[in-house]
Each structure stands twice: as C-alpha cells, then as structure tokens.
Length: 638
Image (cartoon, rainbow, N blue to C red; front, side, top):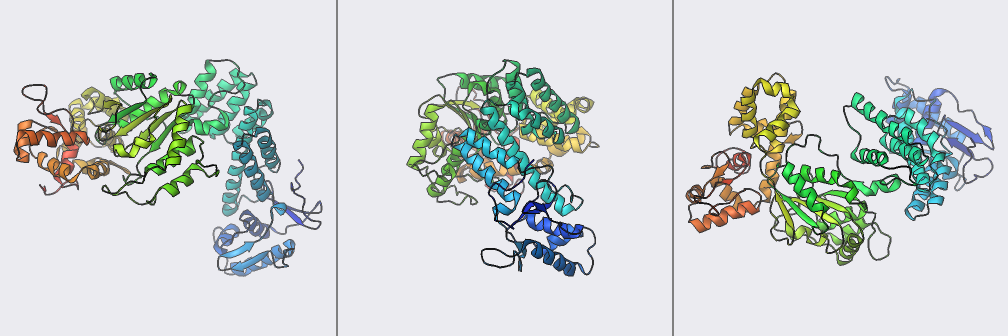
C-alpha cells in the first residue's frame, strides 16, 4: 500500500508514520531512527504533535518500572537526536523540538505526519457526509484509511506508555473505518466493505458497531444467512464473556432482517442509526406493570394521542415503563425514538433550552437562522443559567427562544418520532417542547401529576402488587433463595413499600450479602430508623432518590408530610387521621392531601367516592424520610 502524504511535502522533508510501525522517509528513502529507547521518545512526541509532553510521560514510556538516576540526562540525548533528524522549522528556522514549562513540544505539519493527515481527511469526510455528499465522504474516508497499515506503533507496544497511545490511535482508525463502511452501505456498495469488516471483527470481536456494519454489508450483498449468523455469534460471545445481550438497536436490526429479504439499505442501519435511536438499554429486570404497559403501548400506537404523562412517586418505575414501551415501538416511529434526561445527576432541573439543544442534536437539527450553528449553541444564547448550576425552585426558568421553538415544532410536524422526557419537574418546563401538530408522540415521566397540561393522557403508577414485587426480588437474589423463607421475602418487599427502586436495591444488596438470612434483613428494614440505611447498593441509594423528591415539594407540603408521618399506618392514612395530624377541618385536610397527591407524594383519594373514604397511600419510605425532617431520620420537625 502506498503511503505518501496526500499533500506532497517539499523536497527534503521527513515524513513520519505511526499508523503501523514507526517509520520515517525522506525523498522516498527510509531513515534510520536509532536504538529502541530513542525510538520510544520519538514515538511519544509524535503521538502528541504540537502539544507539550511532560518529562514524566517520556520517562515512563522509556523506563516504565525503574528509571535510572541518569534518566533525565539520557532523555536530553534522545531529544537531541530527534532534533537532528527533524531539522529546523522551514518557516522560522527554529528547532522543531523545544523545551518549556510543560515539557517537550514537537512542531510538525500535516504533510509530515500520517496521523495529522488522517485526522484532516476524516474530518473532511464526515463533513461531506453531513452535507449529504456521500460519494465525496466515502472517497475522503477511504483516503484516510489508506494511511492505516496495521496496528499503530506495533513495533513498540511493549512500552506501556506507547501502547496506550497506540490503542488510542487504533480506536480512531476503527471509528473512521466504521464511518466509511456505513457510507458505502448507504450508497449501495456494501460489497466493497465485507471482507475488511470481517477481518476487523476477528481482531475486535466485542466492537458492536463493526458487527452491525458487517451484518448490513452481508445482508445488502444478498448473504442473509451469513448476516444472521454474525448476530448469533455475537449474542453467544456476549453471554459467555460478559453475561450481556446485544443492544436493543442491534436486536431490532436482526429481527428486521429475519422478516424481509434483501434491501438496498436496511432500516435503522448506517450513519442514521446514531440519530434514529437514542435510548438507554431496556431495563433487564423490568417486572409487572402489565396493564400499564399495555395501556401505554395502545396510546402511543393511536394516531390521536400525542402526549402521555406517566406519574408516580420517586422509585415507582416510571422511567423503566417508558423505556420498555419505547424499545417495543420501533416500527411505529420510523423517524426515531429519543430519550432525554431532564434533570442533572444532583436532581436539579436543566433548563428547557438545554433540553431542546440536546433534542436538536439527537434529531440532527441545527439552530434556526441559517447560521449553521449546532442546536446546542442556541442553548447557550437562550439560557441564562450555567449548565453546572442548580435551578432554584423559585427562579424563573429560561424559556426556549422563539426561533428555536419554532424550528423544533417544524421538525415535529414533519416527522413521526417518539420523545421520552424523563423526570419532568413541572408543566411550565415542557409546554414549549410538546408537539402542537404532526404525528410525533411524547412520553413525560414526572413525580407530580402535571395537572396544568391538557389535553394529555395520564398513567399513574403506585406500588407493585405483592406477587410482582416478589418476582422482582427473585430475579435479583434467585428463586431458590427466595423459596428458603417466603414469609421473610414478603416482609422485605412490603417494608420497601413494593416500590421497584427499593425492592431492586434491596435485592442487589442481598445478592452481595449471600450470608445474610432473609429474615434478618427483613428485621433491619422493619426498623424505621434504619430502613433507608439498609437500602444502599454501591452507588445506588434510595435515600438520595427520596431526597430529590423531597426537594421538589413545597414548604407547605413538606410540613404536612412530616406531620402525617406520625399517624400513618402501613403507608396510608385516613381523612380523620389527616385532620387530627394537621389540626384542621375536613376541607383544609382534603386540600392539603390533594396537594400531596398532585405533587406525587401520595395516591388514592380522601373524602371522595366511598363512605367511609379509603385511606390515602404514601410510600412508607417517604414517611421515614419525612420523619427525619428531610434527612431520612431524626427528631421530627412539625
């Protein structure tokens, strides 16, 4: 394979290659690069071109275990040799390798180093693809790949530092190969990529995107049985090596191939797959909710229902239900299924403009106004709140700009997509994001009822039935262990309020604490002062989830919940109990409890429909949290 730079360098210029063995050529003749340690220094500098490389990094590359006392002096010798090889900069006559406070910096141009030329060609190819010029994109990406001769720096990988740089370069090459293969498939020229994809899959068997491209190329070439075998082999490999399943997108592609013959371009394949499906993995331990799932699927399959609100207290499984439905509805939304988390890791709400920016990026939209600026840039202009700051409950949330909102509505009107907005704080947040027309649908998950939105359909989630909660627990600890003490297992799920999050965390904790009898764990959970401390598994904490929900409540709702926690029995309280705890009359008690229900801190009804009225249900773990004044336990404040 010919390896000159795509842009010819002046006569006498040294051309370096890292995408294979380390080599240097001047005027077509290879140059000697000296002993191994000198080549390690040169390779490390070239792997980070035009960037200071700390002396410690160079030392670790040459002497990974025990550098000698003369290491720094020896490095100076090796760097001097590199200077002699590189010569001076033709533009200003200065040395190519200079030492500064950040380390040694090697100055080199694109026409002198294959990795720089590779990066330039790859960027140009991707830009052409984004413009829709697929033929140019395929040509430029292929030019970049022609610079790749094999594992980068394969002659120096016994050095840990150089091996890390080499792996980074190889990952970049693999990504470009996947881009090129997907472009050729999109052009209907899949056959040119089949053999290369097979070879790369053999070297990188767990890289799913390569597998998907190989499946598509085989399928488009009329080799359907081989394409299906690629999936089967991968599924068995994942199960054997990692205990995992292929991604939902790949499984959907497999099912689609089973159901049709040869096509020019399989749906949900190629470059568009990145924008066609942006969903987290389907929850593997999804349990119960059969009626709610059936209702949600029916609603989203109807042409009349565009917005569905799935509400429930923290930990009730709202996100899991929405994602389960989204994964099952691939054929119904050909223009994509997208999931956006509305809150940050600390539970604070993002701004609508930030969320719209992410939606625009996922859908491939760009900001309005013809500037060519990506949608996320419009977020910066529209938002007055930094992305790493919390939005106070009483603050005015920055609205979506008129132009960005109109562009989003145009996109929704022209596409049939499913949008999942997860953990919405209130109605005002999402009004500008909901479709006003068109065939797209939106699922909102929220702790509160979002009563100010209309017309929407609502699905309210409460606790699981005992049988469903036990089924979930058995999935995590094993049915055999559950059968050793079914009575204790029932006590555990009831102490968790049969909330999927709490039962799941408890099950994960028991799965690690194999020595712990179920009865002892049930006793621990039965102690209100310790229950939340027991519901922690690694970095997953029920207390932290409860804290996030607590912060969403108004001061009046928090105070009321703290007072109601005392008389509540098994997570519920009657109208009479609420009146006594709150120290108010019937009407005021009903309004207070209805406010809690609207905020997602209670379920059921008080004073309505039956005589005597049924108890209002509130997750017992939320009561435990309220007893501690919003800290989980301690002296009650009320």
